[in-house]
Length: 399
Image 1 (cartoon, one colour):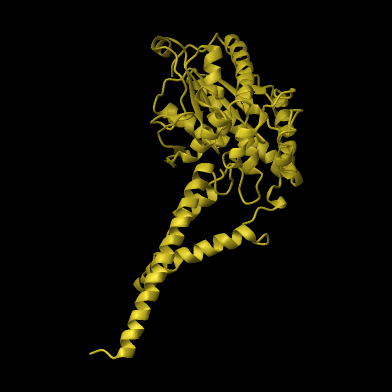
Image 2 (cartoon, helix red, strand yellow):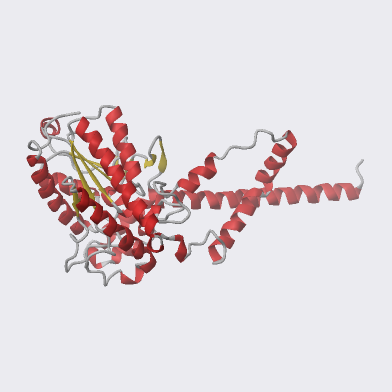
């Protein structure tokens, strides 16, 4: 029979192991929930704070629509995000009160009649969350308004966090599958500056680069079974607790390198980096334009507006705007504008000042309320009609 002392030791070891396992499980659960929220918000390594703050529904932009917009921002957080080959990620199908996502991960709006879907040219609009429509219901996004004013079937190919390189990849994916496209619009600028001006990222790297790298990192092939077993025990009893502790320290310690610092944005102090960001964005547009030409697809690129440029009405959100962040756009956008002028590209339009008017439009540094999307769409219809009619009439062929 086992001695009382040995029995007591075994009981204590069992209780300790049980407590550690339970605590570790709870710690992993906390991190899993947090990771899902970060994934939906987009984003670790580049969080889009607009969907984090439901007080946005209280902005004067949404006067009389408070409850509806509270629901919209809650729904934005609920939509699962999944890996998408070649482009990075997309949202899963979703049907809410203000947001609808189809099986292809596209946000959808009220379609035109079936006859128009087959008889009229089809337009695809690519970009980030400003195209996707953060801050707007399904029928109030930029693509939805463009369809309404142009009377052309319009597909929303925007996705939160996408840079121009991802829009280009998404466009190529559609070309390779022979998706019927008559006209393509790239509406961009904000995300390329937001991410490519960060010191820890290279130009053309999206905001989830660090996350993808860490999750794809392979174990060393030379590891022994003993080391694997040790890692297994650590994951079972301690790993989650350790990781949660690091996350907590990160959140309160300004000195840790994971905490955002002013010097993490570098374009304002590095003219060469600012030019590289501008050149790369323009190069991605040039490639997309060339591909469209080879397939007989009409193409237009739009340099999108941002709250730090022009003279928009911002007294309702001034306290939330980051001066250091704004300096990145003030460093890169003028270079882009100069390059566009020098190359005389009539297939690029500059909307930097389009929202400089005396009404509440911005809900943060780049996203707009529905009235802003309506203004942008009306102008976009004018610009596409004038250019596409000049270039052998309105879009008519199918790729």
